[in-house]
Length: 203
Image 1 (cartoon, rainbow, N blue to C red):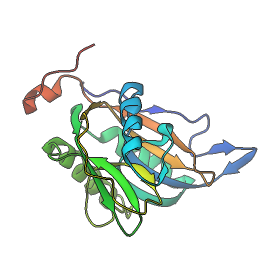
Image 2: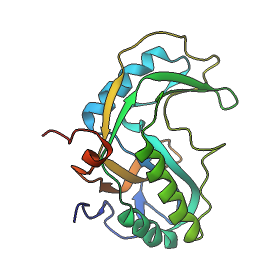
Image 3: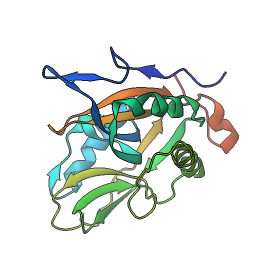
Image 4: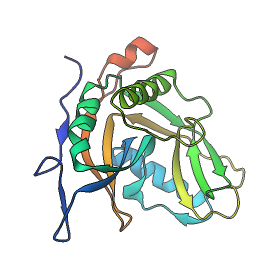
């Protein structure tokens, strides 16, 4: 089996204790979750973005936003995560962009790999089949948010692209404090990227 088991980071399934309160309603999203090296490289791009910079530990690439979900929805969402199948994704973050209405400055890809679109489409199909209404805001445009409250778009400037080999999909909880915490992660398959014309990951 190429795919690892989901690693659930909850002491009690369906609940997360926060500051002494048992939370039974969760604001959730699925995302590609960077490793430390990719996260550090993405964090350096924030210097190119105007606005209120995102904390390094919060950087990610959203696949589907779920909004608020009850704890009873978590087993189904964890099952969807476990069933996802995809290779590790070699991403080349090589451009900057701007969403004017929410005033978000972001980093993205001139040519997102087809495997990323396939993974996101498979996730959306699973969510819709299970009765979850995911949101991706005007279609899927893969990006990493660098700053919010950006009054203008990032200046056009050349920068060294970030090579991010995405190895994990996470189900993430967003707390009222602004903190993000992965509830569960799934490792994508090593070596399967060879089928797409990319070299396998190196240790």
